[in-house]
Amino acid sequence: MIEYSIPPLANLFMQAFGVKIGGIYRPEQASGNPDDPTGFFTGVEVVEDINQAYEMSAMGTPILFPVLFSSGVYKKYNERGEIVDKKMGDFRLPIASIVSFRRDKIMGVTRINGGNGTVKEIYGFDDWQVSINGFLIPDGSQPQGFKNPLEQERELVKWDNLASSIEVFGELFTVRKIKRLTIKSISFEPMRGKPNIRTFTITAISDDPIELNIKSRI
Image (tube, rainbow, N blue to C red):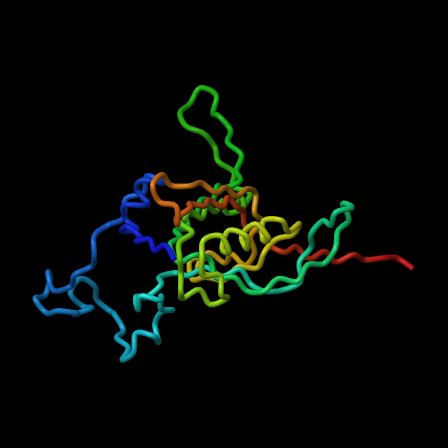
């Protein structure tokens, strides 16, 4: 069996997406005490077992802000172009993933004749624009058993094939009150000289459920 080594993920993010990842957090540089969580920050709650705070990777390191596509019955098109039900299981996205968010305000802007500036009328907020960039890498900690990059890519394609929004869980989504995503596009790219690593990019928008109450006259 051929074994591959995975280079530091900070270098991979810079090569693939142009994203610079900061250095390792070393609290002893601030307080002189090793493993002191109050070295840089205040109000930090310390737990006895790190497993209480984070999901752990196969290397024993915490997985920060994991993203989960939730199980359920979704819609998809069959070979005849008909909408059918598709049962999906949970899928925790690859651990080497970063998520970015952007949201515009819906507003009308009116120019002032003979004056400076504009009048803004805010009508609401647009959908969240969500971009998920990451790497498909060998992952022994993948809870659903998709441990190699090819299995992870196949599962992502299955989610992309759905014709409905996806229920999503993750702290970064919860703070923005995002419960569902609609995938607009997905892409996969190889990395030169790294046959066991592929990059992926998901472009999605938030999808809030809308309930309509129809009153009928009898």
